Length: 248
Image (cartoon, helix red, strand yellow):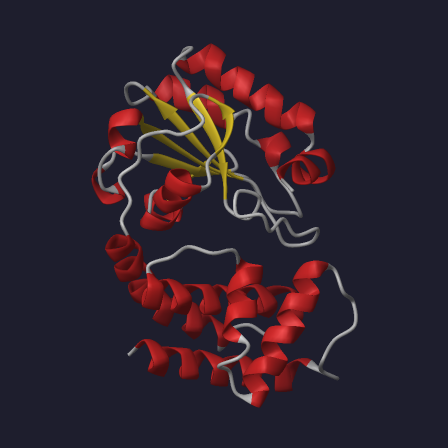
């Protein structure tokens, strides 16, 4: 699945070139890892973007970060800029909130929590996809950290359903809410597709409908379970409230 994603979405030249650029600028002991949907076996032809973690011995200087940020643009996908987290090997071996981290979206600085978080650390611990560096980096990740983080994230994710209307945006948030609820209950990180599939049996009729619609859109389907956006939005809000009650 990773090969398919790189071949058809990220473009091997862009990914390989960036990894080589990182090695040249940051040194030969640098690791470059794909995280997110490709690492979890769930690349989407219309929703996936590129999330990368670059790991070095020491925190990079502002000059080096600027040179690397200038190389982010070719990694953009589906109209979304690549997200890249720069941290250290020692940072990976500790809690993400304590790690030195600089995060970018495209070439612009972004909040560190965008990638320096327990979900990213969990992916690196269990499903790392190296473009450079060790196949299995040493990462501090535990289910309790993941569970606590998803529990904190779920209310904000559910709140976004009330501010979105169109399917291309709402379908992703629907699946994000199912993943956050699953992670809050189990301490496990799964793909958006898998989270939706796992949520289906316990969901209400309307919940099943909006999850199925989101899964179809993520897979590339243009047909919909709905005639218009307002019923979908209402069903998504109801699902979110149900997930919040389930998590407690």
